Amino acid sequence: MNEDEILLNNLSYYLYAPLEYVLKGIQIKERILTSGNLQLIVYSNDHNPPHFHVITKDGKIDARFTIEDCTPLKGNVISPTDEKRVRAFHADIKVKLMMESIWAKRELK
Image 1 (cartoon, one colour):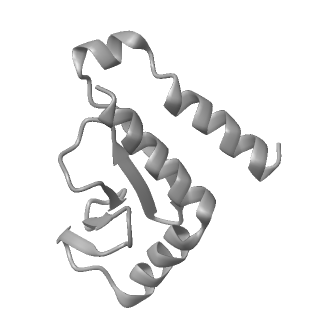
Image 2: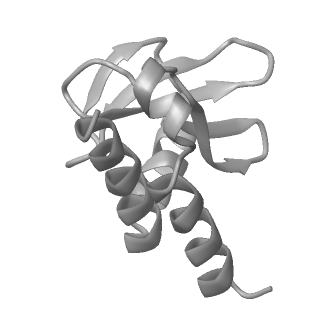
């Protein structure tokens, strides 16, 4: 499966969440990608401003960045190397579109 097919599969899942999740306001943890120890996650029923979380499996990092321009919001300070990786992921138009699609689905609730 190539990158475009993966993106389409993920987008179709995000855009067509089960109706009971929408009606009950259930918060769904949507992992965008994982690279090494870093995970980029958008929660479907999270607070404004539109943002994503960067977490690690060991719990040492739980930082938040805006979807719009990758501005740090709140959370643990991350290393310059990890922040550079996050910004590189965010700069990928496919990643940003996926995050915006998840957030837009949240706005429909």
